Length: 226
Image (cartoon, rainbow, N blue to C red):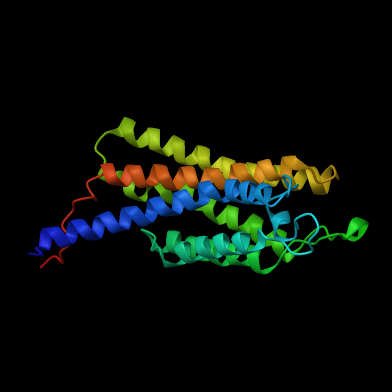
């Protein structure tokens, strides 16, 4: 028989499974692009975005494109449907969702040689995507920490959240500086830096999920107060 407590536990478990799923998708994203590309004879590309265009030997079509677009749309859908703990967090996550879809919808320039533009809708969407996520990790991650009694516990999580926020900003910004300011040719380091930023987001999402599981929120009554 379905009881109120059973239903409440089911809701919480579903919620945390969805959060964990988001972290797993983000963690697997760079690995999926590289691994599926290798399976089709495509070497490691100079950036994650290059997999939109990269074709298998003897073909003009990109077998990885569908995964690149699909994962970004999945991440965008997750972020938009997820409701933040504050209006500010919710807005930032909704914007991050839009920018994630923008990265997929506006592909990077390809085979443009010396005519490549310094700024594009694709690159701008990518930078804004990470900035929105970094904002959430730095400024909004503490919204649930008041449920913990230990001050040391709170500070540990704050440091972890700020570390992931710095990675989410530093990695794509470093790639942009190397490309636009130092004008270095695009190389494998861009893929690595983008992967680090994505993994930083996955790490933040996983740590946040763990923190919430350990907080008093997990089994708080889900009933309206009278």
